[in-house]
Image 1 (cartoon, helix red, strand yellow):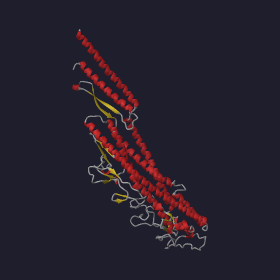
Image 2 (image 1 turned 135 degrees about the vertical axis):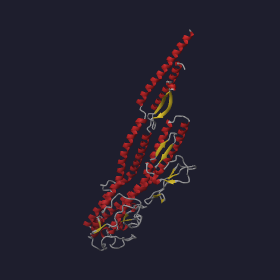
Image 3 (image 1 turned 180 degrees about the vertical axis):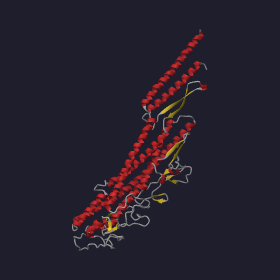
Image 4 (image 1 turned 120 degrees about the horizontal axis):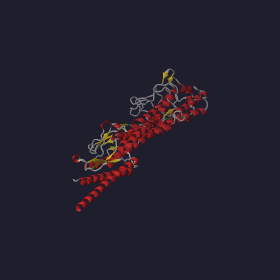
Length: 535
């Protein structure tokens, strides 16, 4: 090839490279504000046959994405989403609780009930004071009902959101599968794939946000999705299946509902591998990340534990009054629940939602002064069906129908023992507040210590349960800050900086003009050479 031929060829490759670069820059600028778009770079390679420069050739169009940093951003986003979910569901329960120092919290209402008994001890003959005791007891029972119902409502919200999360996960998996097929085919045929990879990244972020799963992209464009305990996520549904790989059935959850992979009434999340459709796998117990993992944790552990704590307080409240000769609180049948051998709360799961003032006391408020039954033994006034069980407080005989109106023994007994730290003089409360083996399945534990007094129990219960939301908010704030720092780094690397693109555009324009000038000069030389040969 002559020198002029070579210069012509080199200039043409320069024009093509500059044009391709300008096309990439223009596309970057046009999509600068497009969600999920990453900056594309046109790769060029020097052509040097026989170590002699022969221009430039076009390489592939590449994304400027740090894959490791991107995976970490997705993981932090999943964590933030999980904490937001936790915060939102716990917020409703915190609202019902009120603040620990509020007069409308459990601790505040118990303090008001204590004040009403102090007033009764000072003036036991006052019908107004007796009525006030009943009113404050009703307010305390109603608060427990509201809290128990709030927990059950939150569990049902979690169940509904689990169904929505499963649908979102299946949708993301289907999108990942569709785009992966296109990417692999494009790579195999030598076509560009950066825009398809952007779209798949968006689907991957949706998937990881729901599940907290990890992924690995192979050189051929295929992808491996992994989870805890050896889970490999399929991206396609089983043949003939109407849904994706994940399924969960709808359910109405009550206080007694429990999840168990080998039993229970709460449905699990089932993963069906299309390669082995006859062996679906319950993966509920291993889903511990993303929105889906947090919803399962709330539905099956956090919220049932809160229910168990409320039930334990309600049972302890009713039991301690009953042990002193006053059945002030009971269930709808007029009974006070007791512990069970094995699963300690088996007889009173959900009691917080049903506790009420003993019907006989509502009908005759003077019973708060006189007592409902004797100690030991004694069957409470109808409609109770079960007598007080051991252990019981010290000997007590109720004020008879024609007894003195100034009878204050019971009120002082309630203040000293039911609301105090002992069952009777020198004897600690029995049974103690349960903190282990709680819930319908006996597999839950409480962080609330077994306080001696109801007041301390109530204060700790309110602080513990309202504090869960506060902890979620604090953790979310910290995780969001961390995620945003990583996201800014990723954006700086993979995002489009219009100023930088415009600067690059000027460089490419100059390069294009230079290559065009070489072509023009080459043409002039050819013209001169031609004219010289014609002379």
